[in-house]
Length: 606
Ligand code: ADP
Picture 1: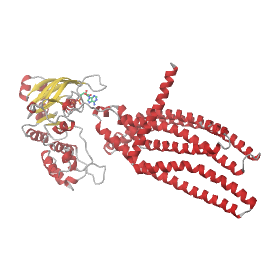
Picture 2 (picture 1 turned 180 degrees about the vertical axis):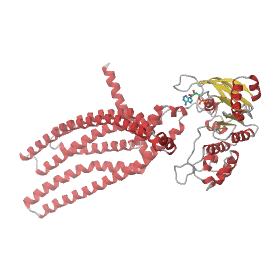
Picture 3 (picture 1 turned 90 degrees about the vertical axis):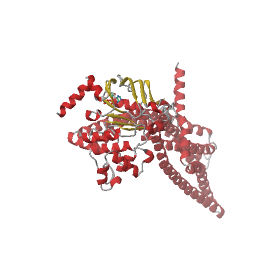
């Protein structure tokens, strides 16, 4: 029993090293010349210290000999060795600088590359991933650390090789003194290594545990420091409370960090004493051997130097392994995120078999992940080409959810949604997106130029100025855009220099114009993007949507019955179910929910 647990612990611990290969590949693919330069310099740096120790011995013995004999030849030999040592010292300094330069350049490139990898992965995620706090934490953690970790891992791997080479050369020299000294050298470095690995594991678990708290801190920073929150934060005077929470989070986390740091330091000190004891024991031994005349003064200096350096090289090797373990743990998080499975079962069709069929919902039900109640239940709905449909219902009745399912942001739990006779899952993602133009009530206010804010409606024509003004005219934003100082090139929002802010209703007109960019969409969905406009403007917008080509379908969500009544077909949702449907007159005649809601609103206007 115990044995299997040990084995699994061991294989887990070793398994984590598998990311070393991926890190090396990542660095290699970032810049081959830099990686080669980095590796070669590291290897040379491994050979030089031993050479310096040998030359050091030659200097001392040479100086002693020359001072004894006083011969010119002996003097010049000694001086030649001094010159050789000087050359080695200069080369070492040059190589260390070179390593630093390679490392700094690689770090810049690698950080950028990893961030791009993370962003590109984020583009392939589905909406539910973004709403899953674990995935979100994983992404935040990956962004926070992973850009420095691959380089650190590679640097440590190379450092390991460098120290191993140095060790081999030291060992070869030390064996000349005694094999026992080589053994002492090796054993003394083991305890610090064990401590290092243990604390690396604990540090990583702490880091994982802390990431939701870090995210909350980041959120508080946003709320306090962002322009679109500032107004409310100021007026509600909640600023001090938010800062208090921010401090509280730090204080809670700091306690854990402090305890780990102190324990790490204390253990490092105790275990360090052991290694130092071994070092000075051997020192005494070498000194004694010199006094008793067994080795020369030059040899003593060399052995002492080599032993000392050998010990730090060995310790560096072992802590390097500990550090690699730690880097691997962090990288495991990055790769877990990058390897997160995304829907692979998507179809590839770009046309449906029966375009005359339009959109069909067949027995569609859906519950949000983690929710207890269904957001939609048994939805059956048919929208024919050319149909202009209005969705009506209280807040939370499922209107937006229906649109999210139609746009395949979510997949129904049961039932089927078909476009042109083909299930949504059979469609190629890009082809499907091309056919559906949607503006949600919480559309994005990009801090780009007003023209680009419209252009994003169709990424293929993002910079097409003619289409901008055409769409702006249809979406009723053209009149105020043309009055702005730089017309379509006016930057919106306040984040960047010379940005202009729009009113809520003006933003909605920009968003509507965005929807009109999709001229070839099969269906256009407007999810309450007109709520901040006056009733007249909303009616006019809907009139324009109605006059789209006879083939185009439109779905409108609105709380204004003056607009809703103009739709060909009205569907009333309640608690995720369709409770009534028909045109305005039929629904009034039925004297059901629609009729009641309609008369309530009409009464308000009398
Ligand atoms: P409507 O658009 O009619 O106001 P929604 O479709 O947005 O309503 O919401 C329907 C129900 O689903 C509500 O009960 C709401 O709380 C829930 N809901 C909406 N979005 C989410 C989400 N992302 N995760 C979990 N539940 C959600």
